[in-house]
Length: 322
Image (tube, rainbow, N blue to C red):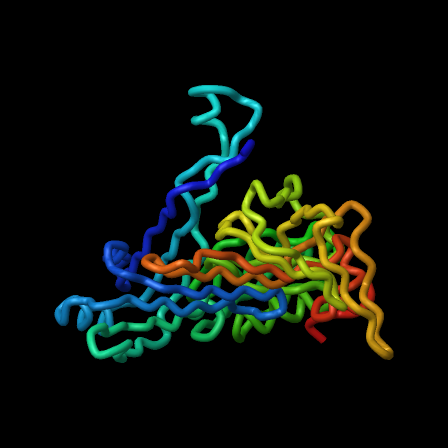
């Protein structure tokens, strides 16, 4: 094969409030990470098996944050050859979740195995236990206001990708902000017919019609595509080997000849496949078992122009947050 992936690679870290991290990767871990563009916060469930009693108590008492990295050791080949290719070819490995523990559940898997399941939420402190209280001067535009809200909240966070097409009018006078940051950010997103969410602790505001950064990720059976992609009434859905490069709003290119067509139903007509086979991810699920067979990413994608996003846009002027 021209491309190859081999050897699962992963790391599971549980950190306390001081960011002292405990690596539990040597134990059996299972995980399910679900990200949806219309959900402000992404969530994950990570189960750790057969912890020692002392370690389990420490995690239950002090575990505040989970960082999950997963993928493969192997490289996807590029045009470089030999040693240069080994250095320059991209690895299919990286962070798939970074969030806060909101609940720890201890239970028995069977008569032998115990597991500790950590229910996690991405950006919980910023979104749900936070406040912004500040006054800004006249002249700021919406992009600058987003920066101010994210960085000057009591619990600040980082900025991810913000749509370049936010409205550009400036504040005619100073304004007081006092309340939850997510409420102000949601209002800005709604005003711009955009989506707002937090991914890996970073704030994103994006429109379905934005041009995604970088080139589309090409998926074929040689680069990780598993099974047969399926056309849906809203776009396409497909499964691939676990790939951390697929994030919300990532553009993925699939040969339309590989996609199984959806049957028409009374009153429902499937949206046509994209002419160039390019689809934008609006739902991404990573799941795996470090001692089992599961190690996959499942994606729901829509046309790159957003014309068929059932949960994102019914048309280009409708607000998905409305």
